[in-house]
Length: 425
RNA sequence: GGAGAGGUGGCCGAGUGGUCGAAGGCACCAGAUUGCUAAUCUGGCGUACUGGGCAACCGGUACCGAGGGUUCGAAUCCCUCCCUCUCCGCCA
Image (tube, rainbow, N blue to C red; front, side, top):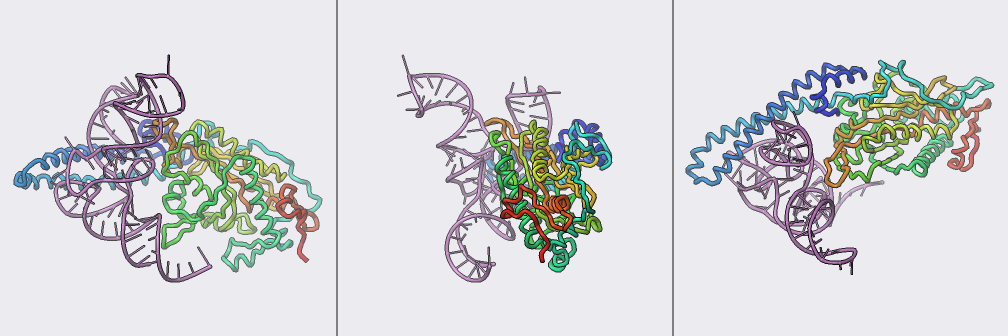
């Protein structure tokens, strides 16, 4: 959510920034009109209520007969107020709804652009491996090894589901545990095991509601939403709270399954494990003081990249232009791994500085000093990393001519010393 | 799922229709004071919106789990819901 005061004071600036991210600047005019009506009504109501309180207190001192004589007129005043309150509530809801639809504004240093084609590769490492055979796509590798069963996944749940079996399941678990260990032991994150379902206030706080309602699974009986990412529970961990400056920065990490309907991507990436309805992810979230967030984004990217480096898989970091920031991000970097089988760069992490956008929605604040005014924190999030795509890159980069897959060195201790996954007899 | 108890400011805790945003205590902050860690005194000490000073301030309104209702007036009465605790039932 944006700051309504900023919109009131610098509407032209806000419009200009919204245009950069591809939003409709006209929404601001409508919003200002609503907001003006809301404020005028609120002011009139405040005066009426003050008047009622004054008169009510007067009545308290009068005799029953005197009271009776003024009751009708008091009632009229009360009715006027009640009607105004209903109008105000409706207006407030309209303003709120309009505010919730506005995306975040970009940081000043983000390159202006209209879409993917304007993104910039800012760094990369490792040359793509030269194969002396035709590298296979991961679904072929996995099927030959018998570590991913696509047919039975469909049988159990439906399309976009798969089953990992034997060394595949173990490799998934090894990746999760290893990534968490790096986050916790080396990068200063606190491990969290959050609920996988949250209530609607939390999904609103993270910015997934109302706009991305259709992309999430939910329980129809109760107010439960399956998390599309651990960003939701982690960012909301301190929702509604006022933190002390000494508590910041807060670094959180969690491994969780994530659930997505993928309705908007119907028909895309249907092969393999690139885009499932359920997938594993190790997530990182930072809660920081506003002046730190730009710097913290850089280190968040470093934290994600470190996983790629240790796996020794070719990767690149892409800086998103204003047109590709998405709804909540004010600045964003994607980390992509090269998949030689699929012949594409796979987004394994997306690191965002959400500035105070989520903090406003979720009311996460902090005090610089004991009796200082509360200020909104800045929140950041990034994958560290997404499992399926990391696994794709791993299988495709570490495949051998005979169909076996070498296990990266860093993972061997987590695989009971296994060095190669070979086809099952 | 059933029965009972309860949800008040950072915490504890009063308040059962009328100057209650809410006593008191603790904690915290500022100052004063006592020549030791510490004690004592005074003052301050919620959030949001809003009007004015357009700054350190002064005023208005809202908020006592949430939402409705009764009333001239509700933290206080009524209804619904949510949550916590205790007991019972059920269950992985």
